[in-house]
Length: 423
Image 1 (cartoon, one colour):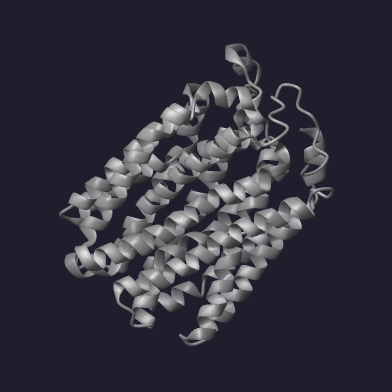
Image 2 (image 1 turned 90 degrees about the vertical axis):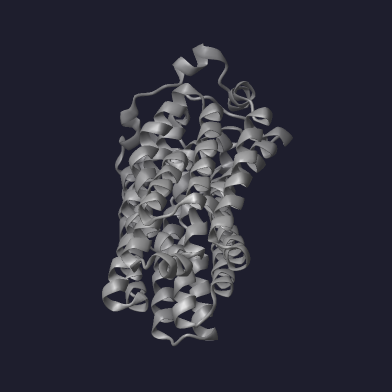
């Protein structure tokens, strides 16, 4: 187990072991999350082509990237709340269809304004997928695997970014950027239509320990439980601060390699994809480490989150003091390994600090913080600063938010165990 957590008599106990069907649910949900982030990230792979074709500024490119996170931040909570009540599987299906169709609209865009509308619709479709999807996944697995599952599931976002950058850059280089958008949109549409055929709401509820309408009514605590204790509020804030760097780096690394390493679009995208793969691997391994080391000492999750944030700041600072080359790439790789390492322990802490019945809304609140504090302003502000001072100088400011995240996690240590005991 993750630690001695007080039992919530109103919450379903959940399964005591992982079943084959649970892993099938994970695989399909994971696949849709990859599609989600491929649709989000393909744009960043074709930044140089759009900049040249439409004469766009870095601020405009940052807006096209960041508007997705803005829409996610604004809508994740209300849409996740609706999904908790309307049906999570049905909601996930509609989300996938919407972001896939919106990606096809981006493929047909003839102007910056049309592309901006398409990107906003991608954000609306993706708004609640991460929070509702992880709520579905953790509901069908034992609680002792929460940090690992949170990290592994959300790593799908990083793997989606890897594929979005790599495939998007390769297809754009050979067939044009419109084909890159079209291919990713069609793939997401097929997977979205397949999802509800295999993942069934009733079976999910049985595995989670909730049966029928009576179970649903019994397991709906007041929404104030989402922010009902000091520790969970600090967890939201710290995660959002760390995601500032985690959002800015994937958005701008292809452009960074294009400008400072003089790489063409496809090779810059491939190199950025390698670093994103390192990021996804780090997210999973950091989550596994968290579950293992915090098995009997739940406060260890906080210590690890602090270490990951400080480590990111140090590695990124060193990287940007070095000239472009192998040494800089190695330090960028180390920073990318750690930058999303907090996802697992923070996801587990949020799950442990909130009732199971509103986990969709709890992860929506976490997603809201991640997007409004980090993932949306990260690419946008980095683009604006890059216009004024250059992209390398903009990157040098990213360690500051990582250190602020570490300070926020440090404040959690005073209240975390008491808040766990009182939940």
